[in-house]
Length: 87
Image 1 (cartoon, rainbow, N blue to C red):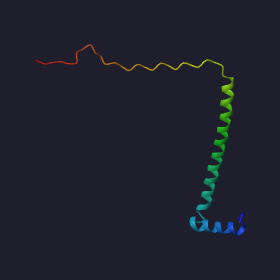
Image 2 (image 1 turned 60 degrees about the vertical axis):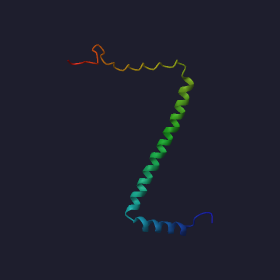
Image 3 (image 1 turned 30 degrees about the vertical axis):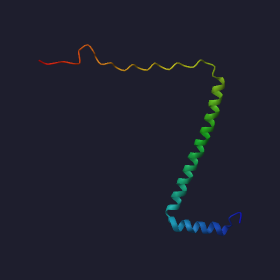
Image 4 (image 1 turned 90 degrees about the vertical axis):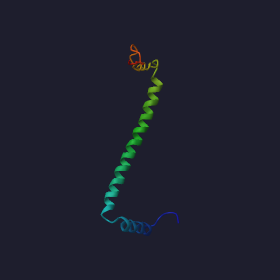
């Protein structure tokens, strides 16, 4: 009951070939392999980023930087009256 025997794997393989066809299986396996490689490299990069962030936080003794001031919105020219009456 615990592990799958060779007969179980053979049945699984036959079912896969019947469902997807023998032409599509190599392409699917290639795509799965590429996806796993990308996932593995991204996980390693995330782990190294976490270590780099922790190291930089421990050594950062500078004062926090000031954010740039937001630009003021343009104000419409109010020199002319907005209510003009024509006679």
